[in-house]
Length: 104
Image 1: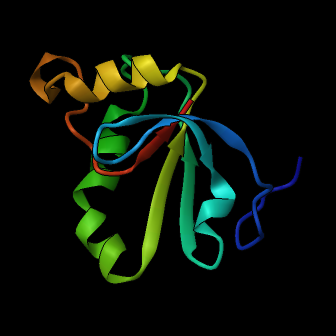
Image 2: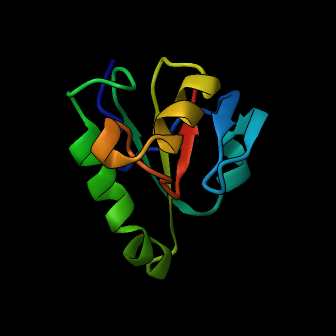
């Protein structure tokens, strides 16, 4: 697979946790068509691998919004695991109430 930086990502539909914490069964990437999107991936929730980077993305959400950019993160965990991770405070191993969509 080639790197898709500055390329159109293939459309997909998947369960997700939205930035407001609601769970949806069918988030579609194409719903963001016409917008700039940062689409990033991490391996698993509740691990030590990426929480600081995920929190850093979230800390810049105001800047992303100012630039008209949507942020969407993806991992192999379920929407329920994503919801539990974002519902867990940072000091207890979670990522807190991040404001971007987390796709399962």
